[in-house]
Image (cartoon, rainbow, N blue to C red; front, side):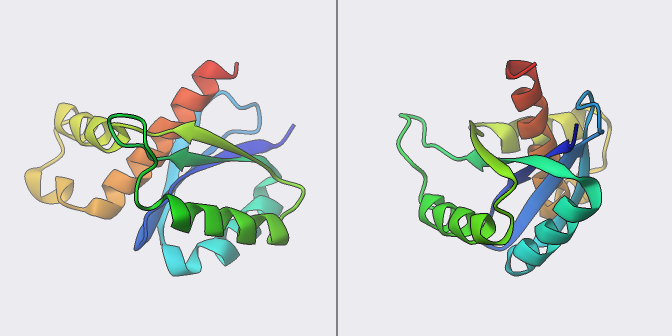
Length: 137
């Protein structure tokens, strides 16, 4: 059984998380400049035997697609061309950034460190993956 990876896609940077091979624990991996995301994921999928890529689906409060959705759809099309063997699942990511910030506050991370948007993106990807695992176990 291969790993599951998840991303919190952004136009500038994207948070990445991955499971262990048994798909029990979701861990933040890193934040990648979105322009470097495709080659990064291609290498990650080969190295870690990723079988599923969970792509956050940002929605507005009323459920409409977010403005970044068109960029995400373009990314998915390009990723499928590079890694056709990896299944892509979408997962609602509403409020993950707020949950990530709350987790940082609750864990006692300094205010200066909480301003690191790359860290928030990585934690958001981890939350997306944890929630995905809960609903697909």
